[in-house]
Image 1: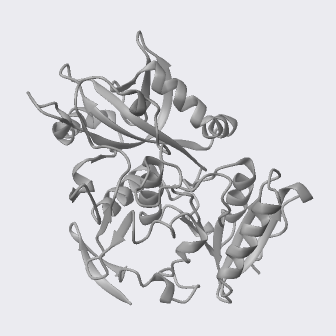
Image 2: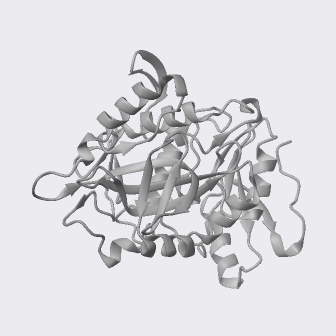
Amino acid sequence: MMYIAEVGDQYIVKRMPLSGGGHDPSCFSYEPPDELSGLGVLMGSAIQVDSESGMAALKLDFSLSKVGARSSPATAAGGSDSVVGNNRKLSLRGLLHYLWHEAELTVWTARWAGKRHWWNIRWHLVEASRQMTVKGGPLREVLFVPEPFRSVDKSAIEQRRTEALASAVPPKSGPRKLMVLVGEVKEFVPARRGHKLIVKHMPGFVFLLDESLHRRLQTRFENEVALWGADEASHLIAIATFGLSPAGLAVIEEMALMVVAENWVPYESAYEKRLVDALARVKERSVKALRYNLPPDKPTAAAILQRQGGPIGLYVVPPSADRSYVDVLEELIASRPEVGAWMWRVADGEMPPLPYH
């Protein structure tokens, strides 16, 4: 079922909430089963979608306010996954994954090659956030996604940024409100105290993080940073809660990272990168599955390939997988018999051909 929605000054055709599974797998409005990714265990608990309005009420396991000026030891851990396996609340990384999913940035077809840029990444993220609420208020009001920078528009862009960050200005008394940053990492650089995060499209503006947070961030997201460093075409995406100090400095409280390919589709390993690259050349529509709150040792589909003959779940079995991992994966596949299965057991050799013919 579809309907016409007014988005800004445009009218677009949208899918009715929670109806994606009822579409033909070859239809662009088809949505793969949530159970094949980390999204399934969150629906109805951490994520509650109103079937009439389509609004999603999100329960978060991180704070959007701060009492006092300094980070607590728990916050300084950079705990995007501080409550691993907590399906009643959404982690910081889980929120990033859900935004990416709802913005349809996990979707790809070779017909889109060369057509994704930061301006439309930002537009889709912002529009997706308009359908979400956190702590009883609109996510859009606390979400900050930097707009594409153009030197000729520098003054106007900086003015809009100042207005957008107004809610993060600390009050004279009481808790400080925090905002959520989603942006592309340009680099981390040492500061006189701690480190600075430099975000693309924000020249001259820095986000500060203390030494403890930076150190733990590098440990927790070592794989993401390494994957980003290994491929110059990939992008490193940061999501962080932050507030402004009385001096007007942006200070990060918690942070998580996600690496995405050149076409902005996420991946979690060198093996998934090979799969994402292969899917990028396929004309059939594919949807990258994400982990949300799930730990790395929990099997999920890596992606879903949508074909007219029926959807195919794509599974990458890492070389470290043991018998227990394989048993759980086989149960996952058997739970959705209407979805075919393609599997790459990395320990057995090269990636098999994709089943797109």
